[in-house]
Length: 132
Image (cartoon, rainbow, N blue to C red; front, side, top):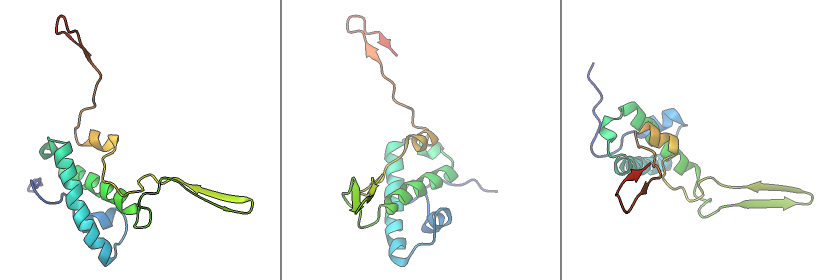
């Protein structure tokens, strides 16, 4: 069996990969998903410099998760950070997790991609000794 080749350009996942992990997409959503899959793959390449050493299955999974988050925002949620409706004595409140549909990697996804956590440190200016 041939090993999966990590593409150096283009998307790590296809629209079919996204649909298999989430739901069937409409024609307009297919077009949007294709663009976002390219963008999410670029985000991974620029955030995780060692992406070529990550299994293709992980790259597909993370790429699809990033795009799903962006697409869940929908077209009508742009810019909303909180929403409240009141009718009589009843009220309903929402807070959107990704109101602008931004592409981002969670801490768990960064860990899956091999990105090291940042650590605080200090440098003694008189000796140059680094203290972690």
